[in-house]
Image (cartoon, rainbow, N blue to C red; front, side, top):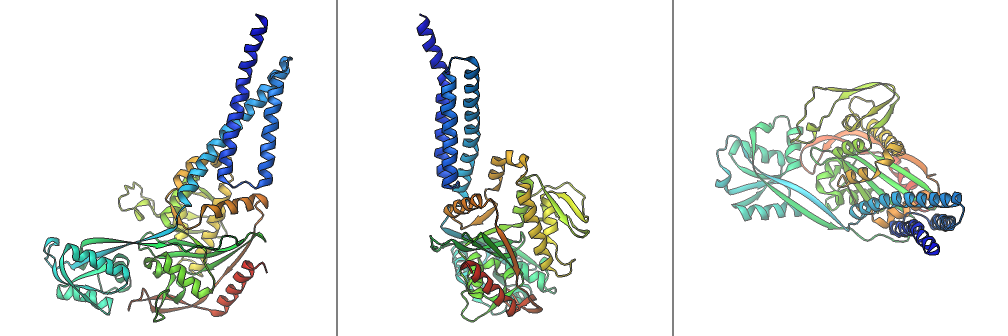
Length: 484
């Protein structure tokens, strides 16, 4: 009878061992699926967990009570670590599967059917001639959709300003891309937005297949693009050249107003990177590839409202400035017309030194450029400081404990063509080198002038590239890519 009782106690004790082993196996299955831990570290982890569980099992079945308690502690510790590991690895796997698993780019453009305020025609009465300006593939899709909805005929105009004036003075109708519609009012002060009315909107989506990249190369170019929340213009451009063999990252900053040939235009027409935004990310990528004579393997695109959500998700940042300044405070109403904002705040005051900023304050800081000497170059420096501050914030234990919620909040805040395999490769390299990346910074510059923008007769500020700085940047990009 006593022998049976001892056997029963033995079985109950080893339930702890069984639970620990099952959780350990599940944890390592998920960790191997994640594929971010280098082989050496994985072997060490597996060996460590195995020894802890064997030692726990042996001690748990020993006779002295002190050894049984010690074995229980080992197994409970293994269960706790495995459980926490499963939780974090599961959420990381889910995030990577959603955000880094695409082989297509979707460009979305909205087209407006517009009349003058003086024109009394109603939406259901639309017929006859409709003016339009550009004649690219997206406009052709918009025209096709317009003709499906209305009995209209299309008349192409050669000058966008003249088209707007005809709509106002001759009671004509026009079909115009939404960004172009806003650009005209910003750049042509004699043309007033209050004189026009939008009758209908047509959304055109274009899907571009991502081209296959070289699989085995340990060097690559990543295009980082930040878009405005107003008109799809591009505010931030950077090429990150990464070499996994030399642990080097070269950051090449490119001004938003850099005036370069537009990809796909046989006439050699030029535009700024900012105004290229509405054409689609593929046009920006192709234009930069041709101009810098290099291949951009992948891209990451965010918009200004993403900055707000990301900074808020990590609990704010510690922003350090070498000078005091104040900027206009951007509320959520500034980028979300449906937002209900209850604040009278007008300014963000930045003092010399370090301070904590929330998402809206951070956005307010990185949006400003005109008050600083150097304009857009100063803004690029602010963005760099914000990126560094965000990386530092991610090291905070409180942020790490909120890891899963942060990953959930990041979903949908940016767009990228980076595959999951590349993320795994970069993570392994970072673990291997202890995060010891050599960061090199460079920028291209140019001369300020006025010229035609947005492939129209509209005139705005542009930057004529200084080819000496461009050639120097091209040379350094090639050196990093080729291990030189």
